[in-house]
Image (cartoon, rainbow, N blue to C red):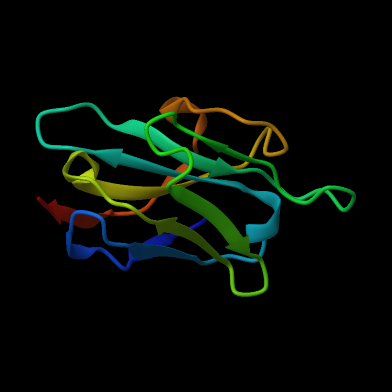
Length: 130
């Protein structure tokens, strides 16, 4: 069982930056693929970014939604059991509740499907004012 707690959300002006953190409990954090998703009011939850389980020869692979590519960066610190989402050049359309998720099986591989993730955090609100 994994528990995920997000932090770092808040109110920021368009063009600004925020860094979200997701702290995980449990002893096997390094074996999970970790993803970030978001849900805007009245919309479905959508994929933002994922970092796969690390392989010694190449580290964790990262993948991004087209809407955030070049602006957001996902990273992980296995020693701290934490995954981060650095968000730069924020836009009003980035306003949403951001959720952290962990995937156990197939964790070396990329997926953007919500149903493939086993554990979810409670979310943190990000509001971008224009």
